[in-house]
Length: 363
Image (cartoon, rainbow, N blue to C red; front, top):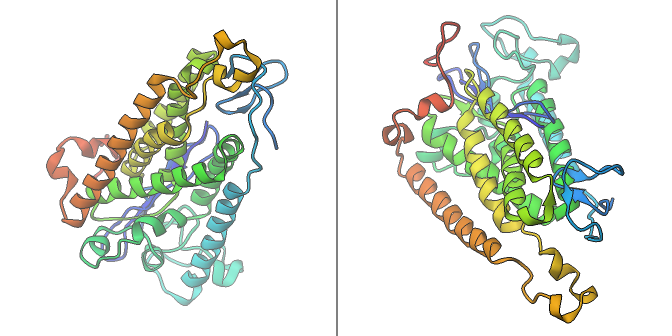
C-alpha cells in the first residue's frame, strides 16, 4: 500500500532524470528533474503477526497458522534514522541551491519568503525543490559521470536526494509505513541491507537505460522493500493463513505502483531494478523457521523435526543468491563498459514511458 517516486531532472545542458517517493497506497516513483518542465525520473509484535505487521485482536487479514508462535520483536530505529537523514539532506540541498542568488529563465523563485531556502520556479520544478544543476552537483545519478568520470559513488548517493518537497514527502511516508513494520519483525540489519542494496540495484538498471537525465530518489530502495515483502510471503508460504488474500493485495499494490511508472519523467527502471533486487534479497534474509521447529521442545519426540527450515526454503534461498550475484555483477560490468541497455532490449523503453496523444516520451 505504498508508493515511491523516481524523478528525472534534465540539467541545464541536458535533460536528465531523477528518482522517487511514496506512502501506503501512494505511488513509489523516481522522477526526472527538469530545467525545462522535466522532473525527476522519479514494540513487540502480537502473537500472530502478518506480513504487514501485528494482526488486529479480532484476527488480521494475514497471520501465522499456530497461534502460540511468539517471535522476538525489535524496536524500529534504523528506518526513522533513514527518514531523518533524507530530510536533513534535502535541507542541505536547498541551502546550497540558494535560488534568490541565481537567475532562472523560468522566472522568479517560488515561496521567496523562505529566502535562501525558496524553491525554483514552478515551471522549472513543479515538485517544490532545487534545480537539476544543484542535484547533479550534490550526487544525482548521471550516466556520463559514473562511466567516464569514474564517480561510481553516485549509484548510492542519488538514493538520499529528492527533487522536491512533494517527492520527499511521498517517499518518506512510504518508508515509514513499509519499513517500520518490517524492521520490527526482522530487525535493523536485514532491512537495512535490503533497503541499501535494492537502491543500488535500481540505480544500476536506471543507468543502463537512461543517459540523458539525472536521477534522484529513494523509490528504488522502497520498491525493494515491496519486493522483499512478496518473496517473504512466498518463502514462508506454509506458515501463513489467508495466503490468497495476502498475495492478491500485495500484487495489486505492486502492479499499481509499477503502472504509474510509465508516465513521463518517472524513472520506472529504478523501480523495477529495486523491486527485483529486493525480491531476491527477501528469499535470502526474510526466511522464517517452520512452526514445528520453533515448538520442538513442546512436542512429543515422534513429532519433533530436526531441520529449522523446509527443503523448498533452502532451494529458493540458493537460487535467489545465485541470481542476485549474477544480476548485480552483470549489470555493473555492462555499466562500467559503457553499454546501452536499449541496444540489448529494443522494447524496454516502454517500461518507463508509454507515449500517448497527451504526451511524448522523447523530450
